[in-house]
Figure 1 (cartoon, rainbow, N blue to C red):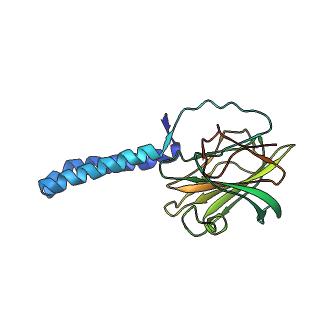
Figure 2 (tube, one colour; figure 1 turned 90 degrees about the vertical axis):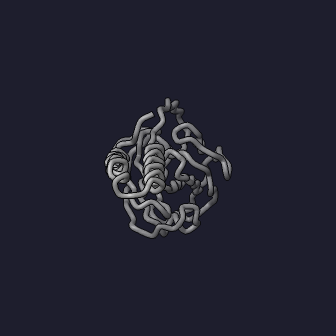
Figure 3 (cartoon, rainbow, N blue to C red; figure 1 turned 45 degrees about the vertical axis):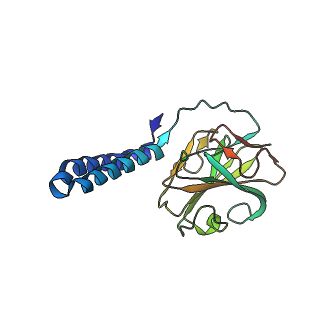
Length: 215
């Protein structure tokens, strides 16, 4: 396991605050308050380290497969009108990431980046149906000779920053890192309507390992 690069600065700041709390609190507060502050600061620090963890995984990539772009639970599988890029009917598969899930995001297929756009927006809870079009979000389209997929990173109620690494025309590989969403979020996939879905509602998926669909 390693710590994601997006969390290193935050963890360093929290570590400095933790040291200051432990060093100065005994000179300012009574014993019970000191114990509470020390316990709370350690708990927050451990939770932050846990959130930014990236477990070591060995990905086995097969042709014709769409892989989960993140860890989480499938909360939407439905036909929908995709109006940002394709402007046609697509199968939407949405994966909700709780604060306990690993939060780095991965490419679902091999291909080239042919579209990228960041949208500022609201911070509704990520499981809310309107979060896909109303929340802060970032969209990329990955395209190869057989399929094109829109991947949408959506910030949740707690998240305030989405990081999306690729640039237009980048060549990317399935299960490489696409980006990161800080503190609770969701990822939508918009797939061709004739694709063979291999997951179900409420299924727990693992980024880069679970097959979402086959084409």
